[in-house]
Length: 358
Image 1: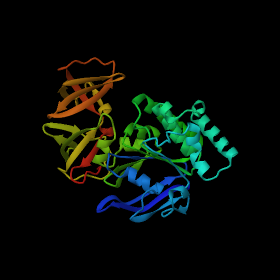
Image 2 (image 1 turned 30 degrees about the vertical axis):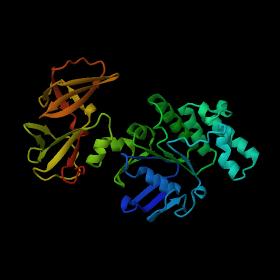
Image 3 (image 1 turned 45 degrees about the vertical axis):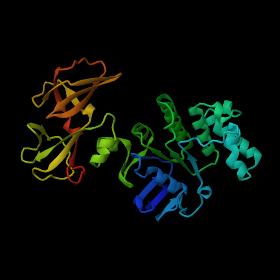
């Protein structure tokens, strides 16, 4: 498969502050790529560099085998959807959609066809004569997406387009954007700090921190086998449980305080040193309760958080809090004694010093 977008050795500075650091990224033709990370990690800066809104300090950007590094945004064949809808308040929806086409002297019959196709795809045919002030947040964002669609772009760029919407609308528009990608088959690059958006939308996710891509993989691999401690802690809600301790190589166990956890089914990337200081991570859903196993860990229920279909139970091991996700119908009370069994094959272990997975 051909690459639709290639970012080669890209560096970008704000004054003396280095935002992106020698970054490489290849995005396949027709791929839905999500740039995920906390505020300030460089994801929106990277998107703006691809769009041509910022000049690079070093590196190149290629779109469909064309070096666009120094081309103007209008010559890059991109469509961009911003967090703020950026609609013209005095224009109708129809005129907002057609504005870019009218500026390039596109024939009127072609403009009409493009608007008809985009408005049907986004279900905004009945809104064409309204102004932005007469639309809901979700409708405005659909119009903003439509304005990008009518351009016949090679690549669509989304900069946190759903962050101004309420939870229900976000869920609806996630579905619409995913369906749109399926119907168009276009390359899409999507910036978000919301891991739910990333996990549900992406073909691949680039998890970023401090201007560096920490892991680039499909959502399942990033969730189940995070490359490092940062990715493990950032992806997942509720977050992964972490315990600091050491590896006893002779007995093949993880030791923290007076507790030991056998590692027979853990898939080590390489053989660890004896007494290596590590961080042991396990997700809340990978802990079973009251399994009557001889290896079970005893604890007391300290907090219960009902979440509808799930319930989150909090306890502690060696004074370290641990969350356990169970079925919503399960019946536990505060101070109940529980036995927990950890699914070691689903655990993640990180070197305490390098923070890399071992």
